Image (cartoon, rainbow, N blue to C red; front, side, top):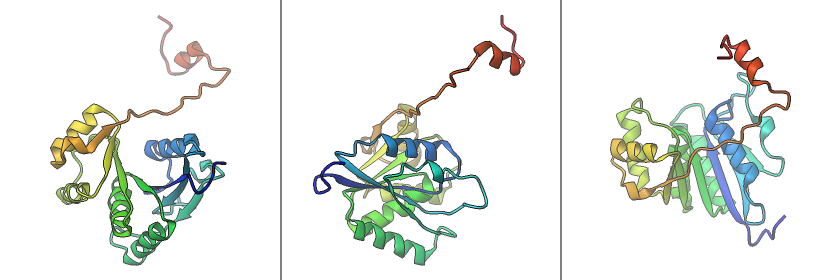
Length: 196
């Protein structure tokens, strides 16, 4: 472990730990962060344990983990707890992923006086006008928005009218583990493809 006074305390905020690409990518990031430089923590806003399979068992063991219990977007008591947690944690930065966490995590960080970085990992026309306005407003207080590709950065910048200079592209990446006994031909056959 590094010297705690020199480590940067970083809080990662995510909607939930249900099985999903963004959730898994965040857990991978937590596992790979250099502990000599960063002291990461994780805040999960919604609790689906007992109702769905979650990735809770995959949280790296040295991560400080805080579960919140938001029942809806405008859950004032939980939001006050989140702001208090961010303020009390004296984090160097807050990093958010997915709209629910991007909105509530960024607003909590702003109110706590903590720099915030959000992320956009997909292209979607499904985001309502209200959600786009929230993102557009919070972008003014966001240090940087991480996009998973140039296309995502350009799309979100254009669609939500957020200056392109707010975006930094960090390409999506996830370690791919291939089983040792993996057979390409066997897999193709099991899926009904010929060897041709």
